[in-house]
Length: 336
Image (cartoon, rainbow, N blue to C red; front, side, top):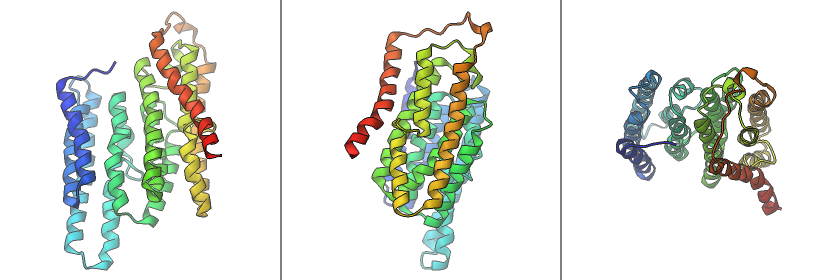
């Protein structure tokens, strides 16, 4: 399982606490300070002297986040100085939005995100793809330009869907999946806070199951899914959770997407709806491609290698997979 020493627990506590500082601050400077504390607490968690990739990832993360922080600080200073100049307000708003989007790894500022995720463990990837997005998204909801974010949503959907097609690394694939889901998250944030929180909770729940499975199986690349002689029940769980994460009905992951599509259609955002649905279909395609390979390919040279797990582990994963299947069916009856 995942082991923590006292130092890691301390930095993890500071990481969570720094997000609360940013969210609860009543000034932009307070938000910036919270983001800086968050950055300085996450770097010790991801840096590991025994692993060159994690050391490289921590340096890349520090550089990109520092550039975003400098841009954010410059923007809020400009906002204070040029408060009465209405012509500059649009430019400042775009700069603040861009720096926050860069912090969360949104397209088109996403180039650091898949590379850094490749050098992290599954637990650190989970923090990067969930908790590290909360503060920038909430700060973005305070001050955003609708037309600019409309363009950013389309970029996230298209790059997240297209970028995952040619990936062999599971970590990079999940990073592009996160970019795709970020497009949905940004739109849900623009609609209402409750819808964004619901979508974020569902997304975090689904990827936590996936990351826990990959961590237990010690898998980092797609070919490991069909080279290793896996239990058919584990393969079935992977299938269910991959399809749920892609947003295929009747799985639980479809519910938040269904709610957003309903709102899009009511407000007549037909082009955006089409792009978002097509983006989800492409992500489902590369999920199905992985699962199809793991079910159909059979490598005889690995027959001697059999993975066995304790019943408690399988019961735990089966329970969450049942929630993923039954959750959508139960919620359908609730909305009727």
